[in-house]
Length: 119
Image (cartoon, rainbow, N blue to C red; front, side, top):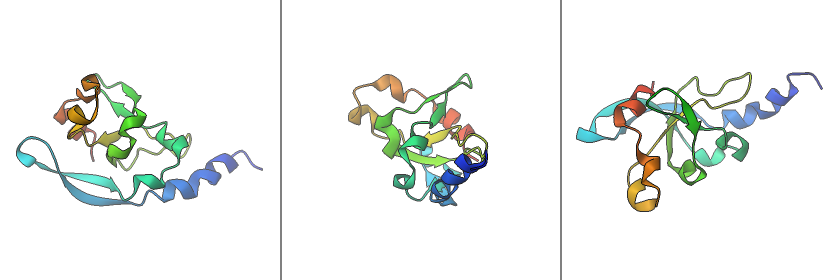
């Protein structure tokens, strides 16, 4: 097996994300933003989900808590690096997370920060 085999092995799995452009309505005033929507986040292997991160206000990425895996709305088109297969960031649907989660500190990302991270 060549050095690139590990990446090739995951190539098909990454491809099953089936990114496509979609308008997502979210946030104050129901502003429409262009995004790349994941057709089925269920197609993503757990090994990749574990690497999903959210970009914080100060530009630092932190790991997306497993409780929010099913809330992923979108990732940008460059999120999956072919070199290390890392998803650099995802955009999460934070709607109702206050009532669904007992950890409000996980819902503190500001709207414009998330919008900045959408292509």
